[in-house]
Amino acid sequence: MKNEDDLISNLKHYYELSLAVLKEFGGPSVYFHIQSIKEQESNFLSDRHIEMIYATLASWGMHRMGDPEDTKTKMVEFDDFKQSIMSQRNELKEFIPLRMEGCTQEQYEEYLDKLKDIYCTLRVSISDATIVAHSKTLAHILPNLIPPIDRQYTIRFFTQDNKDFFTKSGKYRLINLPQGINAQFGDFKNYACRIKALFDRCDRQLFTIDKASFNTSYPKIMDNLVMAFVKDVPKPKKQ
Image (cartoon, rainbow, N blue to C red):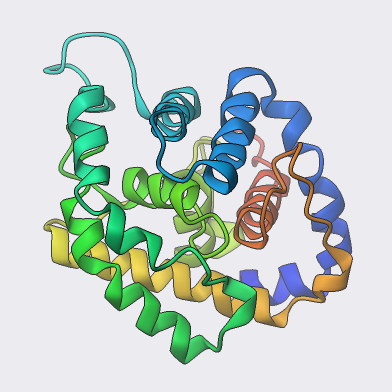
C-alpha cells in the first residue's frame, strides 16, 4: 500500500505531473484515443469507433512490425478484432450507464464479474497474455468504467515498492504475468478494483475531465496518475 499512500499524500503534485503526459506522448497516441472516446459517446461500436480503438492500440505500442516468431507484440487482423467485439455488442451496451464514480467497491466488483465472458471472448493480440490488450480495448469501449492497465506502469505500481522499480544497472525490473485466461482475468479484476479503491480515496474535485486530452474520464485520469508516479521515480545511478 506504500505507493498508494504516497500518491494520495502528494495527489496535487502527481496530478499536475499527469497533465504533462499528453504533451509527452502526443501525436497519434493522443489523437486516436480522443477520437475513440468521441465515437464511443456518439456512435457506440460503430465501424469508426472500432477502427479508432484498433488505431489507438497500435499507436499505444500494441503492434510491432516484423515476423510473429520474433515478437508477440502484434494485434490480430482487424476483422477478427471487430468480430470479437461485435459478437458481444448487446451485452456491452448494458454497461454504458455504469461509471466508476457511481458505484461502491462491492458493486464495481460485481460489474467486473459480469464482464468476464466478454473479456474472455475478445481477440486483440496474438500473444497469450491478455491483461494489457483487453483492458485497453475495454477502456475505449467502456471508458467511464474500465481503466487501461499497463505492465510498465500500472502493474509495477501495485506490485513493486517504488524503491524496487529499478535494478542496480538502472533498468526497470521485469514484470511477470500469469498464464491462462482465468488467472489473467483475475489479475485484470484485481488491478481494476485497486484503481477504483485508489480513486475513492482521492479528492476528485481536484480532477478535471477534458475530452480533448488524455483526461477523458476518471478511470483514465487514474491511469495518468499512476503513470506519473512511476515516471517520477528517478533511475539509480549506474554502479
